[in-house]
Image (cartoon, rainbow, N blue to C red; front, side, top):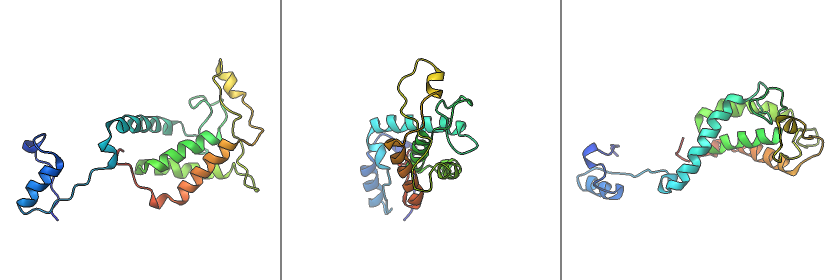
Length: 170
């Protein structure tokens, strides 16, 4: 199969299927490979927003591989469920540029799992607070279901990483 791009003078004149038919009748074997997400423009808005958020968040990953409750405040504690959710989103995206941040988060996540499997240092919930001290003071004493679930999503994603496919919208 010969791989060719859409020529500039064909742009906008034919649908991809029509162009494939034209090229096929001219003797080319054509395969159309368009990521599924490009068929839904609103999906691209959402995935673009996620891409922007992950690109910004990776800059705030701590030395321990986690993220803080207030991401740009070094006096805020590292919050494990949020970190698991961010790293799981990076895994789900399938973007190869996220691999070093995913790998960095693994030891930090493992350090927050007790010997009996409980995920530790999960905040008691982040309601809208009146100031930064409100977020810094959220209890991490109780085992929270969302922390357990996000950690499971993260660890399952790590174990299944070789099977993750990019959504095509890096």
